[in-house]
Length: 116
Image (cartoon, rainbow, N blue to C red; front, side):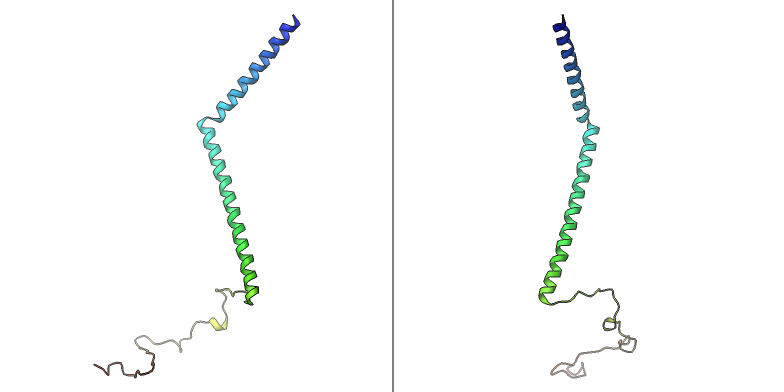
């Protein structure tokens, strides 16, 4: 009698366990669960891609510094930094509207209409 009760209980427990496992698998394969899992994978892929891009940028900056040191080039100046050598021309040095300035090269004269 105890053997029958043992095997009945074991079978019932196995049946409950198998049913629960099948139900979990079916829920994980539902369209909503698949969409959530795909979205999570896409977010994880985006984070990995961002981390890769940041690693590449850091490596590029490090290598650029190494090359600058090897070539004896100082730090590159900030293009937006205002200094005297890059100042915009003053009003006196700018050409006036309507005036034409020509470069005089070898063999050129000041009068552009001499041939006509």
